Image: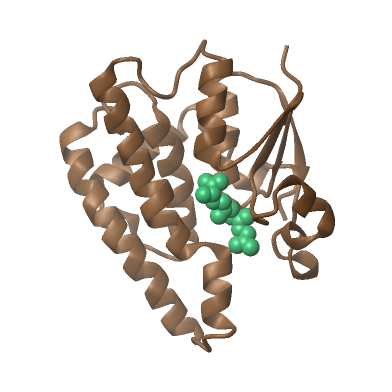
Length: 215
Ligand SMILES: N[C@@H](CCC(=O)N[C@@H](CS)C(=O)NCC(=O)O)C(=O)O
């Protein structure tokens, strides 16, 4: 029996990934909210730094295990709770899924993370319009490549007809892009797959707006 606590924030894309994974695996969990903006950001507090000195959510605690990095967390969940696997068993497919998930989580997401945008707007003195242009540029670079890949790999979901880690990363990234007024219809495969995924309860139940700490 699991005793899982997820330290996250309703709008955090990386925490959103883990919520989806936990839901897909039907694992019950408690949420501990770390407000990323209030009081200069609770991720910078001494208490939170004890959990993750990198000052980023999510952190997952499962009994004696404490982990940060959403992809590592989901890897752990796949190994510890393998009833529903988010990385396919078949080797070729497994590495395709990992690579595409990393296209999103490693090559797209960090460029537009809160602390990057805060640094641009603060010390770098970038105005709102330029910040938006930065955001839109890196989303477009990432989504254009991903769109071409999905033209080859997608079925109902990102890789064929089974939900995988790529889907778990895609939906939060699209949510984030929509917050910044990116027109997702420019990427028809991304739009279509996202709409199929949002209809699944594991994804719908992880949506930011309905989390206990949503404002
Ligand atoms: N690679 C990390 C990214 C973690 C991350 O960037 N978390 C963001 C929220 S999505 C955060 O805590 N940001 C706080 C900040 O930028 O100060 C993961 O996948 O877990």
